[in-house]
Amino acid sequence: MLADKGYDGDDVRTSLLMRGILPVIPPKANRREPISCDFKAYKDRNRIERMFNRLKQFRRIATRYDKTAISFSGFLCLAAAKLWLPSFVNRT
Image 1 (tube, rainbow, N blue to C red):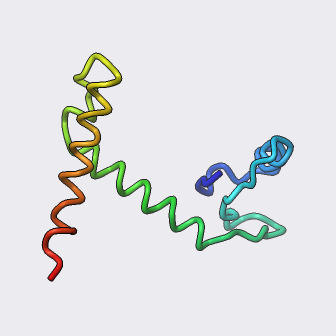
Image 2 (image 1 turned 120 degrees about the vertical axis):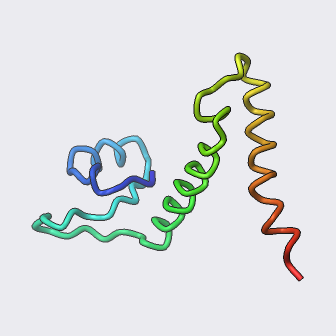
């Protein structure tokens, strides 16, 4: 589970470990015993958040205009393709 510093608590970490989930949470600055964190994996969280922020710039996705899950998923794919194509096409 990738999470930000707000979820850095011993009870959260132990409940995740009890369920077999490896927490990737950076330690808070005021933690007495710093816990190691895989910061390489944590960078992926930032990339995912930036992708969601770019997708939410499409008003139709942010406000969920589509009534059915199929039409919402279809427009989500179209929006992702629109964001992806300029970086793919302009490479020379």
